[in-house]
Image 1 (cartoon, rainbow, N blue to C red):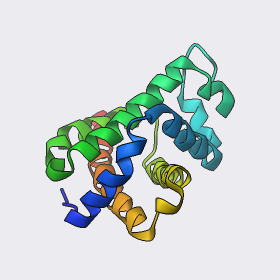
Image 2: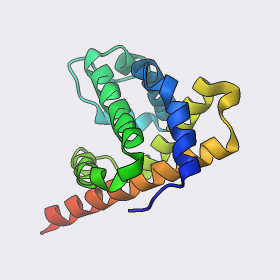
Image 3: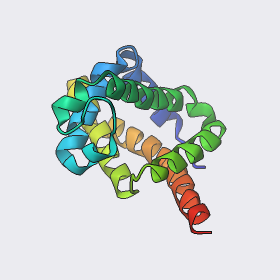
Image 4: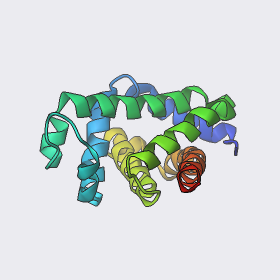
Length: 159
C-alpha cells in the first residue's frame, strides 16, 4: 500500500477538519453529483423507499444511513493517514461487498470525481490544486485496495 507525503496528510487533515463534523450534508452533495454522473447507479439501492430518482434516494432514511457509512469510511481513512495499511483488510472487504451488490470498478472513478466535487463545493477558495492532488492520492490508495477486494470476490465466485 502506498504512502502519502507529509504535505498531503497535512492538507487532507486540514480540509477534513470542518467537513468531518457535518458528514451527512457533505455526503448528500457527493451522492447527488454521483447520480448526475451515472443515474444508473440509483438501481443498485434497494430500500423500502424506492430509489427511482435522486430525490427519492436522498429523502430515504435508509439511504442517508448509507451516506453516513460512506462518510465514515472517508473519516477512517483520514484518521489513519499515518497507518493506511491498517485499513487494508477493511478496504478489501468493502471492495468485495461492492462487487457482490453489482457495483463495477468504473464506478469507483465516478465516486472519486464526486468526492472532489463535494470538496470543491464545500471548501470554496480553500480548494486548491495541491489539496485536490492530495485527496486524489488518498483516494487512489483506497480504491486500489477496494479494487483488489472487488477482483478477489469475482474470482471466488468464478471458482
